[in-house]
Image (cartoon, rainbow, N blue to C red; front, side):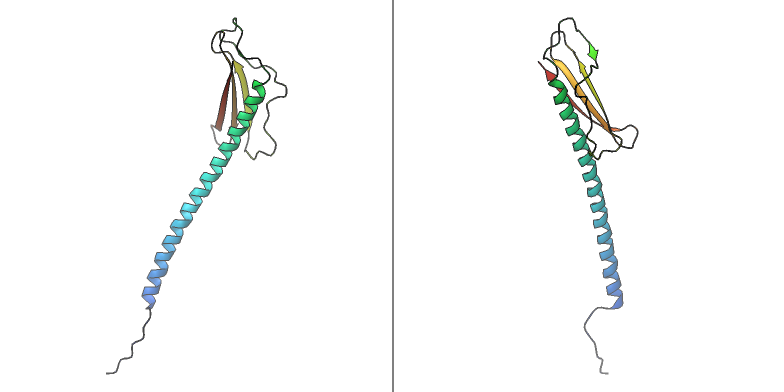
Length: 134
């Protein structure tokens, strides 16, 4: 009884190894997919936030500081020059911007609020910046 045995892996061992490797690759792809989607969401939020801040700063330069005494709770949407806008190459889906100036406190600072809405969902995502000008 002279058995000749060769070293190596059996077909069953190779199949099990391939199955385990496939599970690890699938899990890695899921993590990659999640990270990629989160990155795109964060990038859009950052762009919208920067646009809102830029427009709030631009509008704040057009007005003097404190509200006049009679303007107790006046909310206005004055004509801004230049008008608040979203750059054409922003890459945001369905963007819109809303800029308001109001006087929340008698004789206090002016409040300029810039809100950028974007996205294909309802309600849309929003990024808001507020600047108080004394």
